Image 1 (cartoon, rainbow, N blue to C red):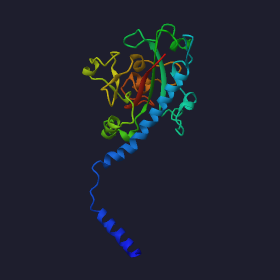
Image 2 (image 1 turned 135 degrees about the vertical axis):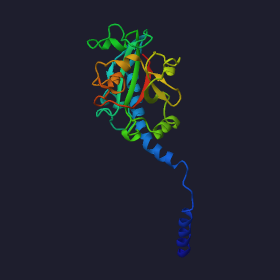
Image 3 (image 1 turned 120 degrees about the horizontal axis):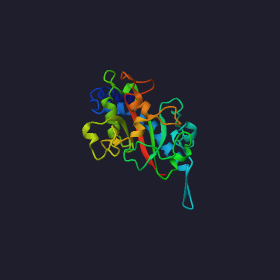
Image 4 (image 1 turned 30 degrees about the horizontal axis):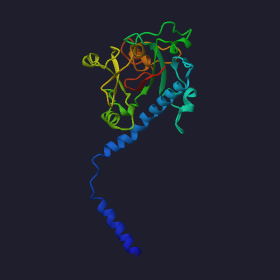
Length: 251
């Protein structure tokens, strides 16, 4: 009996050499490498959303916002992170920043009246404030073309086809003239987040162009207009290609 088991195992092993390789094997390997990179950012961003929700109170019709604009820390969000997720904020791998902008400014270029570094508490609880949360980080070099610095086709494919990602996550890119003229460019801005569902989510102009007080670094310095020097070279810690997740928060 033992001999027959050995013989059957040997025959199966020989037969397996005649099986064709799965056509989607390359995609399976790429997905296994890329999805953890994206999932880390999603977990952090959604924890930051829960932090903001926990710091918004409405009692007897009175709304109290106890968070301020600026960069969140791991201490802020760790109670809202899924069990077992590591800290990718302290080392700067991913950052999450709250911006409170003037909701009456159609280009989202200005802060609400009275909002400044000397009085940050007045920013997000302001009746004229619209709150945005944006989380971002560099796409790792291994998922970028070493010569053009563009995102690899594998990375783009996984980002666009995976069912695990939300609607507001994607990669940052400056917009073409056609995209700038689109009705989806809500803020008449030059940059957007290209996602799996929508061609582009426009990023508020203030976030693209200005430094955010209360933050060690801003989106503008990392991914936006302030990421390059006078000669066009990238500043330290800035990115050619950013992974970003942006949502508008209830306030």
